[in-house]
Image (cartoon, rainbow, N blue to C red; front, top):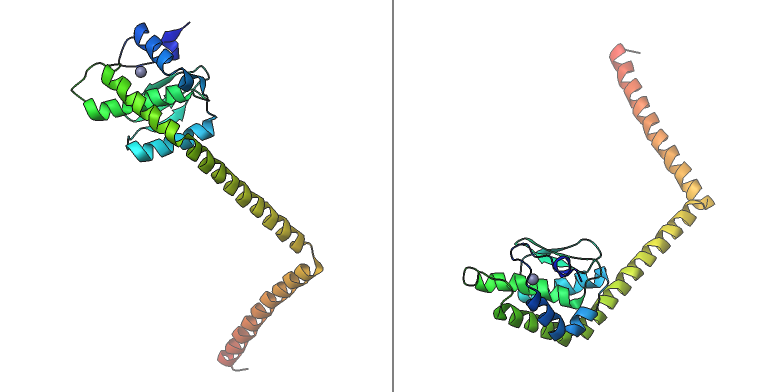
Length: 192
Ligand SMILES: [Zn+2]
């Protein structure tokens, strides 16, 4: 198994023991995959709770992740385990910057544990809120399509066409009045 590529870390060389322990300890989390849009939603909720600053990006399809100062990159359809692992890196940096030089420490593992506990406690709530959000945006989209359809249908009616012609006629009338006024004024100056 190409573990090194499964967890790409930029600051620390691969340490097999850590990952094996972690995968065994959090097997449920590593087996639970999230669709990108749900992962993004969950990330936003966890960010709201923990206040780490990294934005989330997706790259590649092999389960992997990395954490930089400004971003966390996860593979598409990331597992809950990888999501929590990278967020734990962000929290570890916030909490132990300059104190711990290594990244996969016991303190790191405790943070990951905490993130996962928090996630499992809120999983149902997050999923329900996400579904509601999707539902809302679907309804908004449907309403917009309906509105545009009605608008297009209205524009094909004789009433609408008549209104348009009347509006055109009114614009020409205005131009005519302006021209008449201008001619009158010139006539006065010429002395006709
Ligand atoms: Zn790591």
